[in-house]
Image (tube, rainbow, N blue to C red; front, side):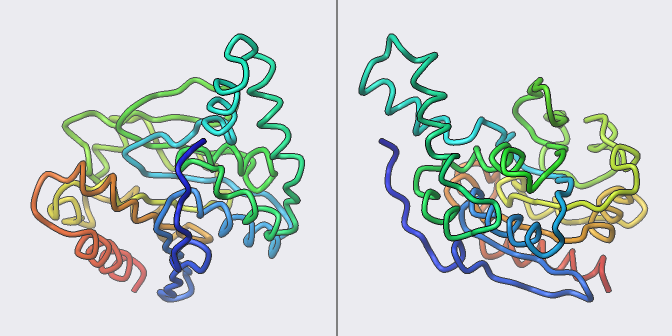
Length: 244
């Protein structure tokens, strides 16, 4: 069984910041953005597109680790049968229009399983995952691998190297999702307007922005001595400057 997570205020009750007419919702653990996306789905009645910037790809199947560990404890030889059975059992009790049913099973969800869970629930119709680890090939969704020299960057050269462009969104509405563990130095936030046109377009065009603090991963991946609070403040200041 996976470790039990403490549900902090920033998970079940995300910090909400409004800059201009844009809402930014901040959670501690990335999987809890699922609840924010679910609320948006309830308000609009239609699925949207996700653009996520993260160190990790976060696109594992719904409740995969929980189902895998449960299978290993019962009968490892029946992995092909039991893993999907346990996954489907949890998914069956989740009502996309009732967030209480989503909250009830969040303890079994890892922080890299929320995107494809949101796809399965109908909250998302597509996603664009920009990350530093893997370029997964799944039947649905799009993955963009950031070059090592561009880790943490928000400049156009990072997006171009990962082969992402705004054209991929086809002018549709989208959510912009950012994980703070993507940033390893304070210099990552020196976003010259002339060199960060893609990121600025993403910020201005998003119908909603979600931010995951991911403190454990941030502390492990950072390359200089700065805190998660400093990182969050830097991002918020950048978003405010872009949206002013």
